[in-house]
Length: 287
Image 1 (cartoon, helix red, strand yellow):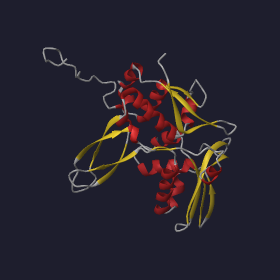
Image 2: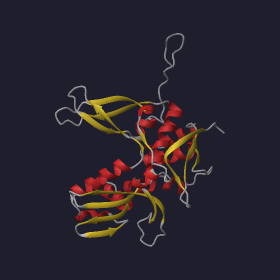
Image 3: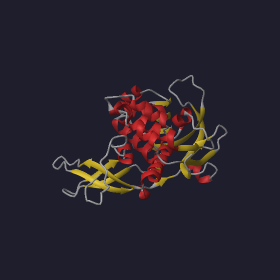
Image 4: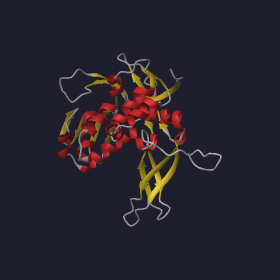
């Protein structure tokens, strides 16, 4: 079995008794994963890419040597992103190229920016035993599924409010399953976003009263656009993990483009495909 490397997680696995275990062990990507990526149905599906990488390279998580599908689904997104970053660094080094198109309507230049993954900022959740942590988040029993009859489980919850909007929320940090469920809302990014917000919502309060979560996407059809954007921003700001957005400055027009680091940037769109060799024979001919 390949050697493993121990890493520290920004969130950690929450045990049923409320303890947080922040250690995990990873190993390098193998030919097994590369072979799977050769399948078009997997290569074009980020959810499947992440799942197979974690199954192949995550040796232990939260004190468990066997990492089940259920554990992977309940993993906080911040941990998944951090683990993928570390697997990429271990397997292929920290340097990647971020590609995007300038969003300036008068420009549209294709941009390619180098990024060193060692330079990515990572926000860690405070330890729940830390007195300051109570100001940031709490560990509470909340329903983790849409089904209102589901058994409550422990989850990490944060609170936020905006007096100008007259809105206050309590929400749990999103899991891998939350993100996967949003991806099922194909063809409408707004509904997908509403689906995630609805799943993680614990309580919503505004001028009309209070509503307990989770709720379906239709809940947000009667909420103001500003309130929804504020909730999205609060979730992004409060959620722990590596900063997965970098600003790419267009050299042509100077426009600043916030750009999301995706799986294709991490592991390359050529994984599983034949790639030309860069070795050179003594004769000078490439092989």
